[in-house]
Image (cartoon, rainbow, N blue to C red; front, side, top):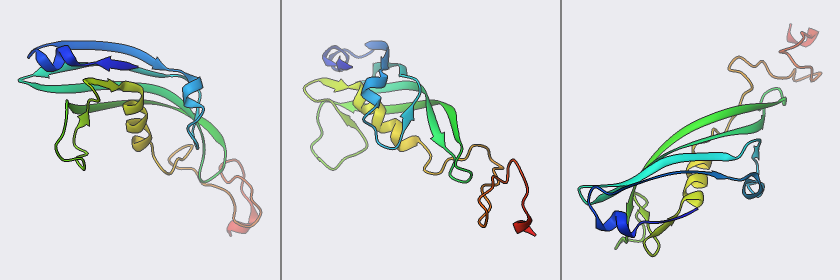
Length: 149
C-alpha cells in the first residue's frame, strides 16, 4: 500500500490513520515462513512539531516447525513498530529514518522488513520442549526411552 505524505510533511499537526492487509499471495514469496493468515496492519502517520512519525501494529499467524522436536505448530504475533519518516536524508548510510521516496512510502515493504527482523531465529513449540532422543529419535515430550538413563 503506497501512502502519499505530502500533506503530512507540509502541515504540522496533520494526521492520517490507516488499516489494511498484506494478502497471502504477497506473503508466499517469503522464504522460510509459512503465513497462515494475511498480515493486518493498523496505525497512523502524524506530524508533531515538524517531525513525521509512523506508528503501527502488525497482526498475523505463522506455521512454524519446532527446532527441538520438529512438530508443526502455529503462533500468532501482534507486533508494534515506530519510525520517523523524512522526505530526504543527506547521508545515505542512515538507518535511523525511513526516507519517503517522492513524498510517499510503501507501507507493505516497511512492514515486511520490520516483521521479519522481529521474528525469532529459534522457535520452540513450548518453552519446556524436550526435543527428540539423540539415539532413537522418539519425541521426548510424548514418551520416554531407555537411552536417557
